Length: 557
Image (cartoon, rainbow, N blue to C red):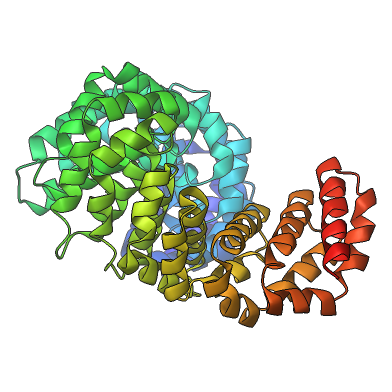
């Protein structure tokens, strides 16, 4: 190490003189010392103050530039050396060297920048602002035959792509084209994996999704799926998963999805469809998720419902009822829920037996599956007949009432309440109301009327008004113990309540007058004061309903 001290002293002098011959020897000694004991040598380098001199040695003209960049790359492997490199002003000259034509200089420069900025979002953001992304993309195109340089670019892209601020810059380059070109040439699993690690974060950006689709990435992914589907090798299974996941990610962009759908005639769409009946769980999952993504607009949904996809999905679900794969169940139910949104599809899906298939998953204990199951049923029961049939299903209603108390899972709780309300609103059936009363569902509808979401409050009030109009007797006790009248008084007195909430609360008050005990509660709470104030409400419907309600209250008293 004494030898090292001498080298550092000599280096200081020769660096100042720019004597390149002696400089080379000193740099070689430093590289040797770093290879033997990187940490200790780095500490000595930091103590010697030599880093500041390196900035002047990083010039395109110097024959020592690659070695200097290599030394910086080596010392920056140590976390304690990264800020000193920044403070010594090395980042800017290194960035300039990315325009060099010397491949060794480029490689060492890339390594140096990568190590200095490793794990530091603020330094990586600085590099992005200095314009390294377009430069590196250009380098990848020029030096695609140099494996080491290609790898350096990919590692840099992988790090920079994690930053949101990089996406716009990447989108303005031809990165998609370059990566797809590179991908097509790779045979080795490890090399493909490196490219995948760059593609995944980039493909989160919608503009880049479309560029990747246009550059032909999807065809590459489909080819991998085709090759690996029957393999039981670990690497192949991993690559199949990565390729099919990336495929699904590309479909999350509206433009890229529509381009691949091609009016339902696209070869990609057809290939993805063939994944659903396969015996490979990963492909079943990717196929169902892809359908859920294609089913993001009415036109696509209607086309798909007409071309037998609903049956494919119900067949898939039937294969996963007993000890099924939860992610496949969730994905297939998501796809069915989306397909059930257009009005024209509902009857077709009901006659295809979708509700029967979906109800097989009532026993599921997995909240994500419960959530999608509820959403699918709620989308399907706009028709009176379907709502009545489901609403009289005691097993379903009991499960809904149970899930209305799933406080740990707000989504499941919300969807259960909304489905209970929908069963009443769409069926308008006394039998459905009786089933819900017997299962203890009334208190949940009353609680739903206090939800922070206006749409849910409204759905609850309309359902409660139907209960009061059609089947008040059996529900009376539950409405009392849930303190419905007090809640309605609060909603009407609260200035923040939306007009439709005030309107439906008054409709409900009028309907409750058919019950002696509930009407007594209305009288005790002096509703007249609150209602008469609403006669001058700016919303005409609210003002009219207030007048009617006031008349009813006055006549009855």
